[in-house]
Image (cartoon, rainbow, N blue to C red):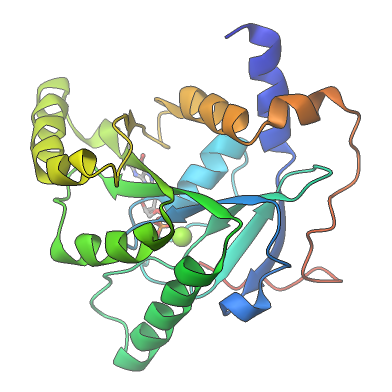
Length: 239
Ligand SMILES: Nc1nc2c(ncn2[C@@H]2O[C@H](COP(=O)(O)OP(=O)(O)O)[C@@H](O)[C@H]2O)c(=O)[nH]1
Ligand SMILES: [Mg+2]
């Protein structure tokens, strides 16, 4: 890919704007356009990944306290047709109350089953974690509408090259069945939001997928009709 597209794509990501938090699927903007959701356990680096893709430090805030994102947080591209990234509440965080967990599970289940604008899932893993039963349950939910699921292994900086290779082998074996069933895309994305490893490649692939290149050619200076909040909303995610 030539450099001009790469930098145009980066400009599109840099211009991502936080356009609101939706506590439930009913609060989401009209179900049109295309959105990519970041799914994964709490604390794997979903918010950090949005920041890294946008090269912005505090676009999606991140926290050392896992499990704080309690809503679907929307980040919109400047585009004539709505295109967004959606930062979802992390699942599998043991220390939250049962009531809160039940609410999250329901909100996520509704989102996956009802929202047709959602075409792709970036399933973010901490490379050191195994694929668990709870992941399988989430994959079942996600896959109901045959969405594309892309596995992103984050925090690669935490491992040596040899450890990384071993972990890739293990995770590939653990997810092999899902690949055969075409429930997960074959390509594994190895990234570190801390060092920037793999982020340019992922951004470029997402940019192509969302056709941000055609948008970048147009002189778009205003946000699409995507905002769900009239005024600057209080951020409801990680603190
Ligand atoms: N070492 C390392 N730490 C990371 C990386 N990405 C995120 N983190 C840290 O992991 C913690 C959780 O990140 P966050 O983005 O809030 O995770 P989320 O709960 O999935 O949104 C924070 O302390 C981040 O600084 C990474 O690539 N490498
Ligand atoms: Mg988060």
